[in-house]
Image: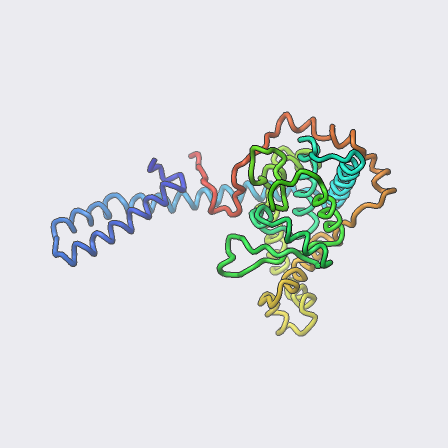
Length: 340
């Protein structure tokens, strides 16, 4: 339980450290010198050792994770492959929506709900800058519909990890993604106000990491697919390289369309539209244009029909299982075990 290779053990050690310091303060006020000496001995001979060992293990774990992520980033799908597969995901949503309308379905079969959710999660993560997965998992369906009806260029995520510091986060939504969202919103069987609906009725919240894994296995043939955290790291890594090559300021100038002095202040976002505009320019700087929704001719050329949609995931679903676990949004949220 106090194995310092685990994050919970380090948290417990820190709590014990704080509590012992509180006890020492109480002993000083009451002049309990003998009790103070005992608590101080516990701190010096035990707790401080746990804390130091925990810091060392955390550093080792962080270094190992950086190496693993560097390997995974090196195997990140090519941009051309991403664009092709997102076009395919959009075509699937068109086919599923048409099938539901043509057959007047009140409820989609599980397999179609799974394919629709997988396609939508893929479009969110690969056709614009997605941010943290939890921001999308908590997004309300009514808000997305309101933004769609207003022809807005973004959705606003009010519930996220750093909302108390930064306020609402605007997510840029390109036209191709909006059309995909419209089709997804039009599917039958919505029981909650969440935008993303889990395929299974036994799970209340969609697991974006689980669906991203399925998408990576099915569309990109990856055994260890990227999750939302790795996608965020890809953007951070590319921007760091741009900064080292002194190209970052050029991007800032493009965002602000003014002098370098003004461009330096671009991240002081004044409105959700500014936030969405920055995300849009960030995306196209790295990936090029967003994927447009395919035409009917393109969908026909892709060879995607309802039979294809119903069977396309069979090869990976035997190796993949849906998960209700919360998606880790940051490395520090994950319990990392170091094997020495």
